[in-house]
Length: 233
Image (cartoon, rainbow, N blue to C red; front, side, top):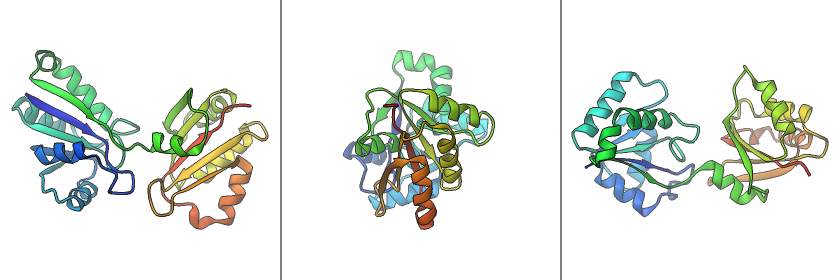
């Protein structure tokens, strides 16, 4: 039986890897990586020497065919992203969807298994330390750069649920400006950045107050951001 193991990898601290993940990677014939250079750092940190193959959002169909052929040949493959869990705002979704469609017969007869090897996710990490109600929340991944952006901010402002999304350091200030223009006065926003890293930080305030904070601390506008818009009170 061939296996594709979808493994969650560290989002910052390279020690955040499960024993199962290390065992599965050590036994794999090939590791599919969003960026082979990033994954090799993780493998070297844990003393693993395994062949790697790049698979990312811009991979050609020939690369998917190569992966499919390896699975048809009975190989055990691992899929990882640069950080976190593949498929969560990540190109791994397209590959898994393709395999579930094109190799449905093999999955049904038990000659191919697609398994989850759970691990880190910036989404769950942020919610776990933000102290925000998350029994019911809306996750938006990365917001669109242009088209539909303003409409989405209006929807965020209108919803009564907690809203979570990812943002880059290049756009976080513009995002806070948009939130300040759309949210009701006093509605709280939590910013989680550099999760699991040395300079991990969680700041909760209104969008206007966060703009002032990052304006006064421009050195903190770096790393990856998780933005949590609190539910309406």
